[in-house]
Length: 267
Image (cartoon, rainbow, N blue to C red; front, side):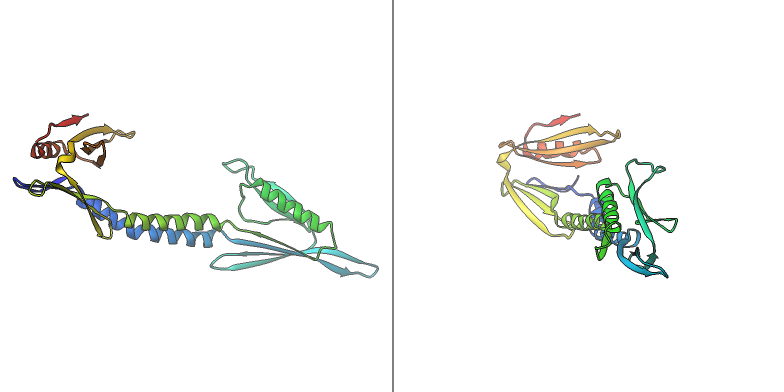
């Protein structure tokens, strides 16, 4: 806090330090950018998987038989890779034995003595992977089915986090926090000015007669850092509180002396 004006009739206190305003401006610009970057990372590092399979008829000298032929498409915002897989005979659930976290799985296709993973990464949802394995096995064992399509992507999580970050930034940008308070004896009013990071302001007025006292409290956080809290306590028991990183007890004493009320300082 900082006293910016002190006369016999007016006491004005600025509650936001310069670094608070600077931090607010940075948040406004940083959060939407971070949100967009998260969404882009989802498109780059979390590819979209499309497995398309069909039954192909193979003519030989003595007979006809069918085999399962699949096309595995892996795509992201930068490139697309298509892998043709012939003679798909089975699908298995692959468990990641070397992952730090247990319970991660993926689908592996067995074809021509090769094991081809459906996704480059393991996923945590065993139920989803098991369902995909069951669908592929059912398709292999049922030549009457025409096609099989399986889609797999995890970009929705990046989108969720990215949009949430952007919305949070917008909320912070428009949220008005207490910027200053002016104790005016000439009008008998307390003027509370709120301002957001877009420099939009709103003013709330209260009667000085409704103020019971100004409290000052000191507390220590979990990390051992000291925090200082100033509270405007009204006779209606409503409390307006704001926190500071420096000891503002002298300013609180000055405000109480200006209002003609007793000091209340807790540690």
